[in-house]
Image 1 (cartoon, rainbow over the protein chains, first blue to last red):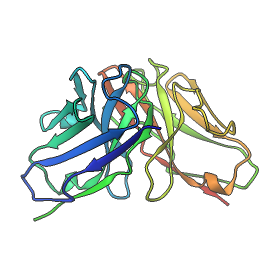
Image 2: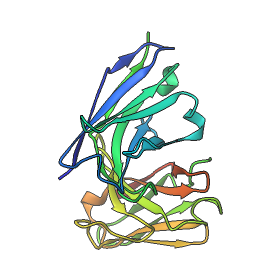
Image 3: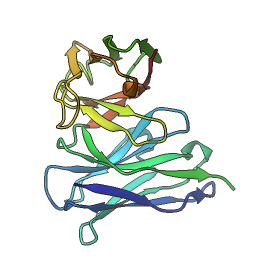
Length: 121
Length: 110
């Protein structure tokens, strides 16, 4: 059973960089065929795909966020991470990490529990 | 890339069948058989219910089914049960090598 767990600060100041890590248990990130993803949900709103990374380091980002997003992978720790720069209140959301089982086509079969990140001074 | 269009809410009585639509464009749903559906209960992470338009993951009730016609995908829930009350989201792969979600539909079981 694959398990994902997000970790990182729950409060970030405006203009700073949001950093989150997703730890994966029960399966190796190095195994091919999966894309490791970040998705967020603004309070009371719908889901927004942020981007994903393959174990090789290949990344794809959502265009509106691309200039501010970096997703990296550390296969030795079986973790992947999200950095979102120059945050504003509009980046306040629950951030989920998830596994895309379908070669990056958007079928997320395992999710973390989500972590609320609030952007406020 | 605009969000896929879903009705804000649908409702049905126990035992009935309901369908939730998800409308996109020829750049996403219309071009790819990569539509997934998710169920989300309050305060919980989404759960994959349907992948690749109509594939049901192991463990998901066969009361859930998916289909697609043109630029619109649909999720059908038959034999509605109280536990089905939740928010439902669709997503699709797009021609921009990207993913887009729908705005979500709140299902109320009357």
